[in-house]
Image 1 (cartoon, rainbow, N blue to C red):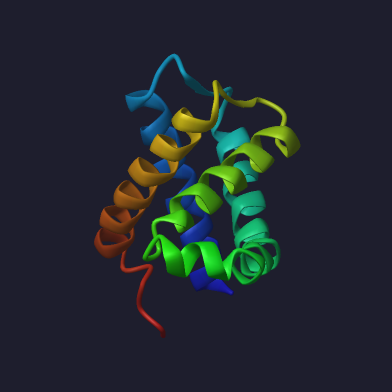
Image 2 (image 1 turned 90 degrees about the vertical axis):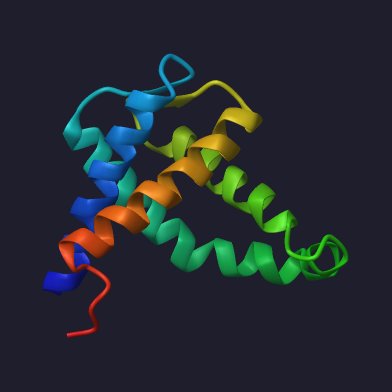
Length: 118
């Protein structure tokens, strides 16, 4: 449980840093909103993303996996509809947010030790 909370905190911090880099196209009102966003993204990635990947498997294989970027952008746009205080200006900004947040999240997770399976 502690590892999950650490990953949520790291994801919230990554979302705040990503928002800072992508201003004004992406907006998060507060750190509490970023925590809620991290929690919603974790749930969407656990529940919705596997279904989207399964349903779009032929397209994903045809594009050699590049369609997964589209799925990530759709997840971000869905989170923007669910989380009050989180706004993204469009599909391309959602895709860029997804890419940048993934990179920042990876760096922060390795620094915080959130990737350990203890």
